[in-house]
Image 1 (cartoon, rainbow, N blue to C red):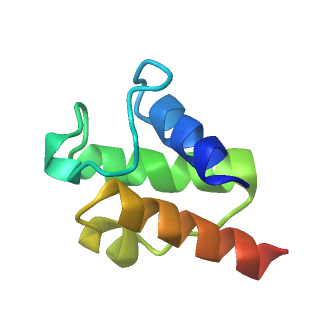
Image 2 (spheres, rainbow, N blue to C red):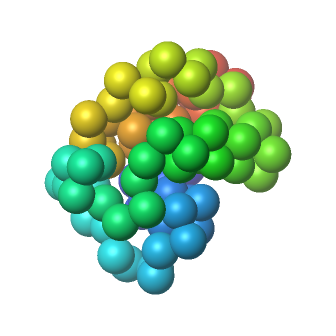
Image 3 (tube, helix red, strand yellow):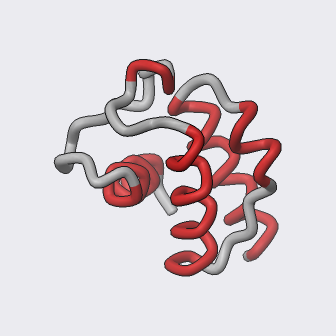
Length: 79
């Protein structure tokens, strides 16, 4: 999964318009990002990508880049 693919996946999971995110945002600045979004993101990663993301690790992320790194690490473990 490329970084752009991961950004598009995150946008889809958060119901954002495509190309809204660049990867440099703080999560507190991302529309729709809240505690429910953590669960939605984890569920979407598992359902759509077959990736398990630990809830505490996702909740601890402060930036979009950290989420993308976590997603990339999970994809690398699954490969």
